[in-house]
Image (cartoon, rainbow, N blue to C red; front, side, top):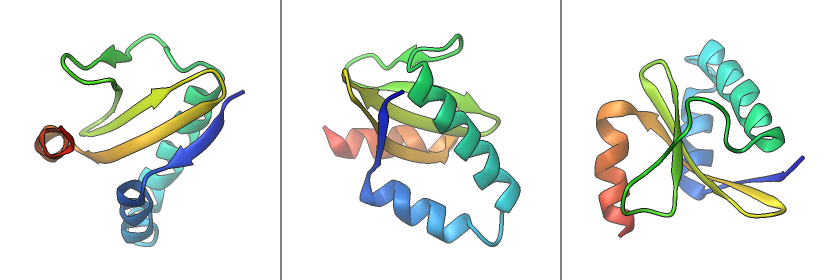
Length: 90
């Protein structure tokens, strides 16, 4: 199982949605735990032009990368915002 590290943006997203959308946060938590066990599950996709993968969770996307020991959760956001945020990372 990989160790999980969250970006500052991801921590802010979780904190903002913790009380207003607890069901979403629970689903995100389960999905991220599953990614720590298997970082390339069925449904994950390598993002073209970026060193990241993404997995869908309804209207939300989890953008992450991994190495041998750590899963880096970079962005969690709605589908329409996540790709704009990725362009800012370049």
